[in-house]
Amino acid sequence: MTKTLDDIVRDDKNALALAGLKMVCEEKGIYNPLYLYGEEESMKNELVQATYEKLGLQKGVQVALCSAYVLTIEKISEIVSSALDYLILTDLDQLTFDTENEQALIELINAPGKQVIVTAQVEPSQLPIGIDLETALTSGMTVSL
Image 1 (cartoon, rainbow, N blue to C red):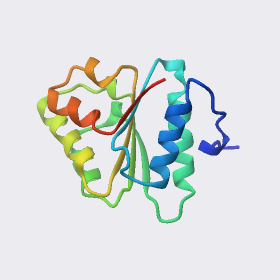
Image 2 (cartoon, rainbow, N blue to C red):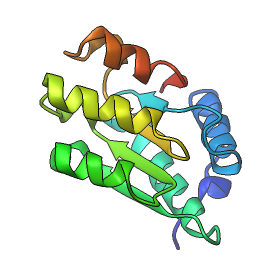
Image 3 (cartoon, helix red, strand yellow):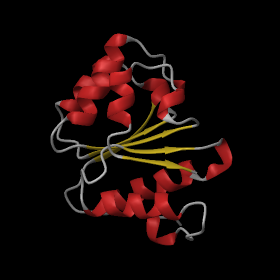
């Protein structure tokens, strides 16, 4: 059986992340982006997979789950101009950053009608990125797991 957010047991470590994820499922854009970070075993992947499943059950909602490993500038531009409502982007810390893809990510975060959920092992200030992208990544809700 596939887990949704409603099936995740709330505890001290995941309470804030779980609350934030449930809120963005109900009100797209309330925390944009929602940035979750922590070690591999921090439950962030289970939380975003459950979010993906929950959103997939909502009628008319378009959601995509994508690893930063496969993210390209072309793919980001495609997402910005698409009818996609939610993008769950995992492993952001694995992306090779340059000025072009940083600008594309900022555009994506600021795109009207889109909700971006990001996971990484480190907080935005520890990524090898410019201040503009760091500001965009921290403009919503950032949660340590």
